[in-house]
Image 1: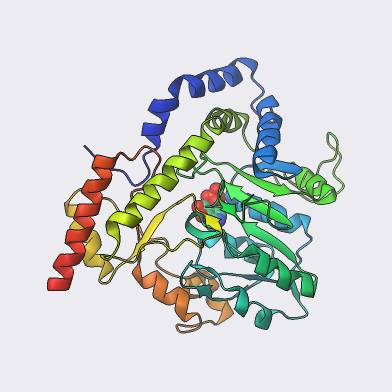
Image 2: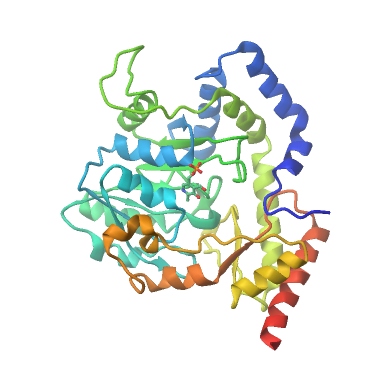
Length: 370
Ligand SMILES: Cc1ncc(COP(=O)(O)O)c(C=O)c1O
């Protein structure tokens, strides 16, 4: 049996009748753009997250862009963020001709270290954009406190943390705007691209709604510059079917994540989840020595792994213009050399997980003995 990193087909087999019915309904009513499923989904997700407004968008990258456009981030403005993330976070800041200002991570959680943020604030800083990496929220209260002292907006990039809890509150409800991605392998994923922005601020919500449809307030009338960042109706339909089992899927992910933690303890560095956090384990990411060898041994055993992420943003060629060399953010650089993600999805059964655990234990043991 093939083991997959994120087995999206197993979930489809489990949910087929309800997903098919939802998609069929869209095919029949034919409102593929901004059909009724989009508003229905937005209402459900806003209630789930615990905010007034959810704005469905085309993907998690555009969610970041729409959020920053609504906040009026201009060329030359600075946005503080982490270098240890997927490219989209820094990329959208740069796309607006604003400057990503990187601050190193707390190596225990891989999230932005709040104690280091204040030193990076300048007169040009407009916002802080923490990422809730691997499914665990960044320390949002501490980040919001720095932001409040300096009058900054906070955008939580919840591209990996939809459904996570922080002090009992949901990811994406913890700051000025929260954004997420519904990429197929996410804790809540669709069958293509999808994303959303969340806020309690009525004016920002209105701007984001306009921006996602070309800055339009009514048909063919455009008070502001926007883009096309609409969530497809078919994707909203898939998400509506999956939202019904979201609580179960999140519980399964947490159970599987904890079980990995128990079974791998002592062999590798397993994820540290803060006591006030509940992770959705978007990735189950461990740390190992000699990662390339360990990955090769696991591959030979039929176990796929991935590295999220091998090169921090400040060392990416696309950000060479910032002039930040090796050694600028040592914690992020060290993590990038050591992290490795194991198969993780809600349908991972215990027998398969045991096989993965045994293979990891033996792959790291061989390495230690060598
Ligand atoms: C933290 C983070 N932000 C943003 C994104 C971008 O999301 P999308 O692929 O939906 O554009 C991702 C995607 O994986 C992500 O992990």
